[in-house]
Image 1 (cartoon, helix red, strand yellow):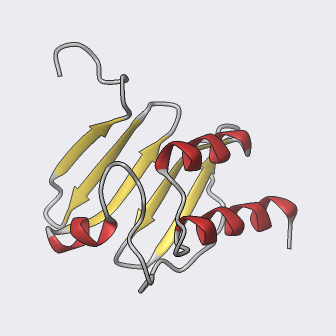
Image 2 (cartoon, one colour; image 1 turned 60 degrees about the vertical axis):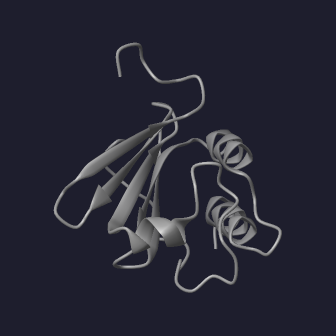
Image 3 (cartoon, one colour; image 1 turned 30 degrees about the vertical axis):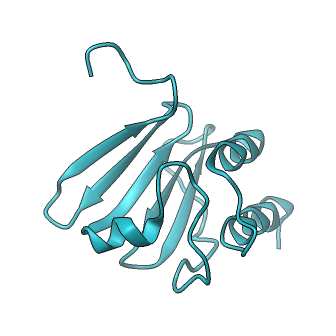
Length: 121
């Protein structure tokens, strides 16, 4: 197993551990690995990461996100709540400083990182 993949697995394991990992720390750690965005798919229960070197190729899903013992400590809210209101996936654009949540009918809700929301939105 590659060092890169092992590092990703360790990050997701820490995020979903009882101690958790706060969203800003998760973002900083992923950026240090060269990750530009990641996609959480609640239907397939996968996480896919994308590096800044390639906008079209993703790494293999590295972690099954099913049935975690605790909620995320992400400041944007708990994933369980997102699923309960109909979110089927989200993409965190680390370089773009936003997270886009997608519903079952294609509805999209954008959450900006603190201080990143453009004027007029």
